[in-house]
Image (cartoon, rainbow over the protein chains, first blue to last red):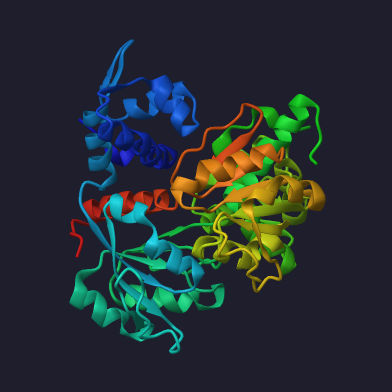
Length: 219
Length: 219
C-alpha cells in the first residue's frame, strides 16, 4: 500500500510531529481526529496534513476524520518507531545530561544504553539514569558488547569529528549530531545535524512578519 | 524585490540552514558558492536550493554560483537575523544550562540577558556566563527593566504553561518551547515548539530505508 521511498523528507519530518498529538489522543481514548484538529495541534495547515497522509493510503473518512489508533500505528510503522532503538551518546556535558534524562526519548522507543566522554575526568561518573560514563575509546567494543543502533554526538564542536569516527569504527550507520560542527561521513552512514538555533531563526522571522502585519515594533 | 510573506515555512527553515555554511565561507574569504556545494553542505538537493533562493530574487550567476556575502546578507535580512535579539530563558536544568553556554546563539545574534527558574532553591545561583538565576515571578518586571525580545522555555513539561503565562504577561510575543508540553497561546503570540526526538525519528526512517536498499539489517 505504501511507497515509502517516494515520501519526501519534509513529510517524514511532519509524520513524526503528527504522532505526538495522536499518542495523547490514544491515551485519552479519543477514536477520531479531524485533519483540522491535527493541523492546529501541530501548527501546520490542514491541506498539508491531508496531502501528507495521502502518501500512505486512505485513512481519512471524508467529513469525519482519521482513525487515531490506525493512523498512529501506520505512522510508527513507516517511521520505524514501532520497535525500540538502542542509543549511545558521546559528550556528557549539560546537553548530553539533559538528553539522557529526557523522558520523551524512552516514551518514543529510544533507550540510552551507553554514555561516553572523551574527557578522562568524566569517566566513571554515575548518572541519575543508572548509566556510568565510559571512555570514548571503548566505543567500538561497547557497541559490539551491548548492541547499539544509533549514536548521538553532544560533544563540543572541536571533538565532534573524533566522536563520529569512533562511532563509524563501531559500525554504527546512523548518527544524530548536536554539535555545531559538520562531521565528514562515510557514504554508508547517515548523519542528521540538529542545530538548536535554527528554530530561533524561524521564530524571529515569523515574529517580524507579525510586527509588520500589526504595524507594531519589537520592544 | 522580495515577497517575504509568500515564502513557505519549510523554505524559511532551510534559509536558516543555508546561512551556516555561508558564514563559514565568508570567514574563509571564499566569494562564490555553487548550489551543488551549498546543497551538499546542508544535506538537501540542489534543485531545492535553487528553488528556495529564487523566492527572493536573482542571486545566482548561471553556471557559476551565488555571491556568498550578498546571499548571506539577504538571508539575514529576510530572517531578521541582521540585528541582535535579547533572550530570556525559564528553566535552568541541564538543557537550560547547555543553551546559555552554547556559543552558536551569541554568534548568530542571540544574547541571553536573563535566566529564571520556578524553583526557589535555584534562585541566586550564578552561572558561568555571568547571569544570576532570578525567580520566575519577576519575569514581567525584568522584561520591562532589561528589554527582552524572546523567551525560551526549558522547564519540565508540568511547569511549561506557567512559564509561558509569565512570559505572555510580560508582553513577549515570541516563545521557543523546548518542553514536551504544548502551551496554550494568546492569538497575538507565536510559540515554536522544539521536539528534540523528532530528528531521531527522521534518522531512524532514513536508516531503515538504507537497510532496505542495501538489504542489511540493523545490528
